[in-house]
Length: 157
Image (cartoon, rainbow, N blue to C red):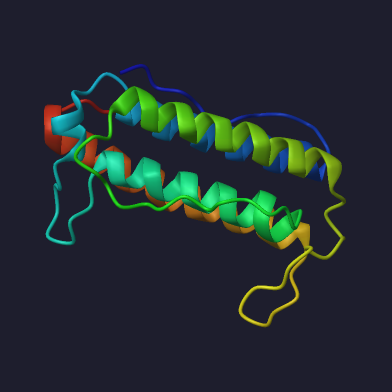
């Protein structure tokens, strides 16, 4: 697996956060891509975490945090349970579509503005949501690194 490097850029806050988030999103896609659905569905740790499960969880997080919480859109937030019929290409297609919509929300928002919805009775800024999703995606990209290596020995970012 080719090793992709952290983005190096001189840009404003939004552009920098988006570049890092996009880099991490693509790391998730690379770790899940090329696997048979049955293999991608296999839990690799006692908690039941699988690569397909991570992709579905992050799809849910993208929809929840950006269109639903940040923009206040009335959208159906997808579930993240891995189903027998889930295929790698379909799950990744939905993940990429969610990321594209999230980037649209980010582009239209000011980092200082409050989200359209509060979360757990907390007022949040768009900046907080963006940083949270960098953190959330990075944590799971690290998990995906380990899971993929356990499956077939492939390493790299």
